[in-house]
Image: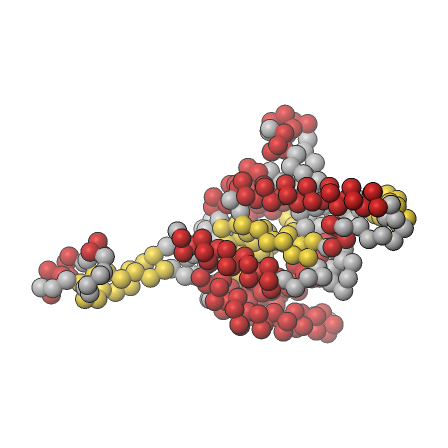
Length: 318
């Protein structure tokens, strides 16, 4: 039996995302994510301007005038939500934590998927795979997905996207839309052997994405349509000037004292985070992965709209 307060929270997310899905996202989702290919639908009489390569010569011979084959896109897709539940996701400087934002953006995408008759699956991960929900259709299934993103209690607090990507490859045989929702903070460090086996630029990527193998990302993207959704908080980009504070790493437990009143330290922190963010973007571009950056205190509908618009333009050019 699900407690009433949990049901209330899930229902609130459903209501908040329902308008966005109804008004725009479901249609844009349909237009930018390709199906599994084309399949034959029917034949019709040839009309001036039709592609002559589509002429069905057998039907044309029988009917004594030209007919062409018509094909439609195989639309049924699988949306796999690959969601980071590491300790850093519990942080939020305002009303919403990164984990709550992750649940909300997952809700938008999942409801858009089922409105297009697609299946939705879920992989929850830390530095290991914590839970897997096989793809299914339907509103109640999506509500279960949202519930687990919000309230599932992971056994670990670390982060290892490689584990999640490898698991995705094992459980998803056909091409899927794989949306990785993470803050991309605190990846597990490479071993000495791994450092020797990879080029430095591929083994140690940045302070934001410390160790998510480019090779693993590239392999996943060859098989699936991978999209990265980064959920961040404003204080992870710019330290507030609130004097001396003691900070504890949510994943490692490491404690450090920081003087946020020193403008030089705040500027150095902001510069470091900006460089790390730039490097993260470079990594995604090098692999060919589209990315969306979301901030907990900012509306996500504009970022989502820009993402769909960019993909739609690219698809129309292709």
